[in-house]
Length: 176
Image (cartoon, rainbow, N blue to C red; front, side, top):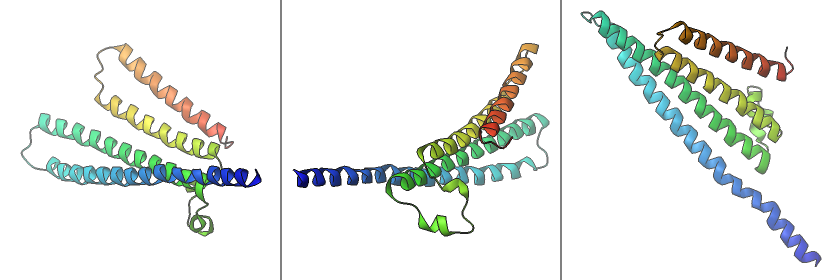
């Protein structure tokens, strides 16, 4: 009976290695999103160079400017999403497989990448996701057409709620 229990406990303990599928997948997707955001950045720089071309009509220049700003916000959003995936991948690895000795012993390592508990991983992901939501709000605000005072009121209410969310996340860290 003891041998069966030991075998089952070994199987149960080693089942944590299934998390490696999520770790590797998240890491690969993070690299893919970093690549996509970088390619978008390169194309945006190319379009920004077009912005300086002489002879462009004012309306065409305004449209190009709005497009460039929207693309910049999308690029920031892409990098933030890739960062979420990277933190998620590293966090899962540290929680279920092993501590990353290189990160723990490095003087240049960021505390963002050191995950000590599931709550720690959740809090770090929540902060980056909050930043993604703020960037998305900014992206929508740029494209918003203001036709009434209610539109401006709704935008200002959204900005106030973002400020409140940032304040509450700051207070939750105990850095108030």
